[in-house]
Image (cartoon, rainbow, N blue to C red):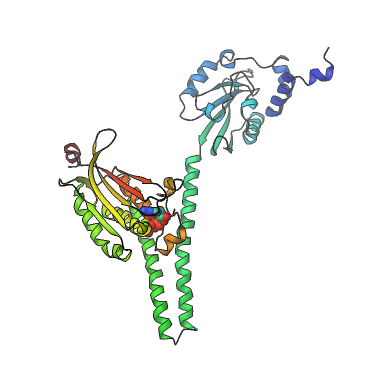
Length: 402
Ligand SMILES: Nc1ncnc2c1ncn2[C@@H]1O[C@H](COP(=O)(O)OP(=O)(O)OP(=O)(O)O)[C@@H](O)[C@H]1O
Ligand SMILES: [Mg+2]
C-alpha cells in the first residue's frame, strides 16, 4: 500500500504542483476536478479546432494555452522552438526557458500582455522574443474563455547583423589605428630627436608615405565595398568583353610579377566571351585575385590566368577566369572564411604586403552583383586556384537589358 507521503510525491501530483507554480494558481485541482488536465485539449476545448486553424495561418511560431497552462494548440513552427509540445499536456513540460515560464505566469496572473527575450542554445544559438497575451474568448466567467496566446519572433538574423556591424567597426578602426599610430610616432620623432638628421628624415618620410598610402587604400576599399553593396540588387547591363580585361589586369601587374620573380601565363580563347557587367568592377576583382597569387603564391614562380567558356550545372553558358598559383596553398579550414571582410590566413604576412583582408570580400560582392560566383580550390602545398564564374550574355539577357 502506498503511504500518504508516496501518494503526495506521485508524478501526477508533482505535475499539478508544477503547473500551479507556473500559473501562480492554487485552484487547479478544483478546476480540473482533482484529475490531470484532459489528454487532447484541441478536441476537448470548444474552440480548439478553430484556434488551431487560426494560428496555423500565422507567419511565425504560435502556441495557445488554457487558463491552467495546458496546451490547447500550436502551429508547425512552434515545434522548432519546443519540440516536446503535446496538446493537452502542461506547457511547462515542453517550455524549458525560465524567462518564458515566468512570462506565462505573469500574464496568467495579471491578465496583461508580456514580452520576453530568450536564447535557445541547442542545436545552435538562436534569439527569440515572445509575446504572451491573455485573450478572453467570451464574456462571462466560463473556464474555457480565458486563454493565453503566445507568439514568437526569431531575432537571430537581426542579432547576427548587429554582431557583424560591431565586428566590422572594430576591425576597420583597428586597421586604421595601426598605421595612424606609426605616422604619429614618426611625426614626433621628426619634431624631436631626428629634427636635424636629413638621412633619418628621408627614411622616415618614406615609411610615413607607405603608412598613409595604406590608410588611403583601406578607405578606398571600404568605400568600394559599400558602393557595390548598395548596388547589389542592380544587375549591370553593359556588354563587356572579358579577354581585354584579362590582358589589361595582367599587363598592369607585370612590375609586381617581375619584383616577385613570377611568370604570368595568360590563356584566352579565340572567340570573344561577353558578359553583361561593370568593366571597372570586373577589373578590380580580377586585379585582387592576380595580385594575391603574386603576393602569397610567389614561391611557385608561376601564375596561370585562364579564360574559358564553360557551362553551369544547370546547363547555362558561363565564362570562367581561373587564377592559379603554385605557392603554399591554403588549409581547408580557412577556405570558407576567405571572403569575409578582414579575414586573413596570416595577418602579419598580409600586413607586411600592405593587405587589409578586404580584397576577396570585394571579389565576392562584385561577382554576386553580376549573378556569378567565386569558387576557390586549394590543396596545402600545391597552390591555389581562384575561379571567377560569370553568366555569359545570351540573346535573351541582352534583350531584357535593353
Ligand atoms: N593565392 C593565395 N595563396 C595563399 N593564400 C591566399 C591567396 N589568396 C589569398 N590568400 C589568403 O587570403 C587572405 C585574404 O585575401 P584578401 O585578398 O581578401 O586580403 P589581403 O590580400 O590580405 O588584403 P587586400 O586584398 O585587401 O590587399 C590573404 O590574407 C591570404 O592569407
Ligand atoms: Mg588581396
